[in-house]
Length: 219
Length: 52
Length: 212
Image (cartoon, rainbow over all chains, first blue to last red; front, side):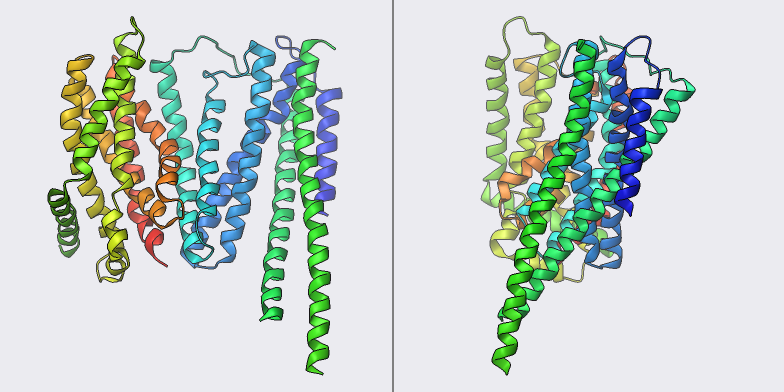
């Protein structure tokens, strides 16, 4: 049901992006990357936020089911984060001719977050399964969400003084149609992320149930 | 295709391929789960027969 | 104030252990000076003073990592961490005590590193010193907690830098900014903000890191 809704949303957003939204005067066609790039970035933040929220619930209510939910949310966030970096890099190449721009604050922030959340998985895999792993992962997830605004502030400060910008970009001036397309794309990507989240969570729970079943049968 | 179009296509292709890879991984997982549940079902049957 | 007394006891214990064993602190001192010398050879001729300021912070962060890797070693080797956790003291006091000890070690290292830097590269002004102190607080706060996580993991020393470096990036920004900027106040204020936010987070969440 959810998947059907997602498919419909993604489909309509694609139609809007390519057929309905007007072409940007300055950047031409490559501007259309934004319709998905920005929602993907926003959705990544949302996933990390969801992961942190589930982590908080785990620490507070001590119900171990939140551990898996937090993990899957962060997993989704990381995937969407990598997609943000990829689409952002392609956009940078298309607009400025460079595969990477240190002046693009959002890209730099995602790079830092990518490092942070990759370490999350390495931490998780180096710990034995159990309540301690769940607790430590949860604490780390909370650190992550605090890191988002702190890092953003740091990058802003760095940009002004340590690396003054050479390239500037005016925020896209969006007409009404463009804005509508953007919103639809955003809802579509969010829906996609949530669908994938539910699917992955389902898969992991089945895995865990099967393991319990196997242990019960072979003991 | 102009270069702008190429990059646009590249960006959307990356997204599309990522989602497809995801679907492929899930499909592989489902196959494995199917195999495991079948094996566990057989194991359960054996146990039932043993218990008589 | 029972809590503060516990913290002081724990910190004193760590300092006394180090004074007796004398292994971590000399290593950190030698490491930071060696690193500065390496940087001298890594910086090409004509590289300006500003680049060197950045390298000071790199040296400090990696020296801190060296010290943090060993921060929980005494507890780990003697199995004392479980005992501490079971003790009637508030778990966060363990973190605070250990952080305080690490702070003292790092400050001792910086007491040597900053003059060395001033001699090798460029003079060090007040905003740099304040920046170093503030960043030190942040490093100790998060470093102690992350080191505790690393201590219970399978990969130990390997994973601590991976956990620490992304979180240290804002500290480096704050520190370097304080060193080179015309208006260091905003960077120092940022460092203070970082310290406050993460110290509170560490203080509140440490018990979950060490509990079973």
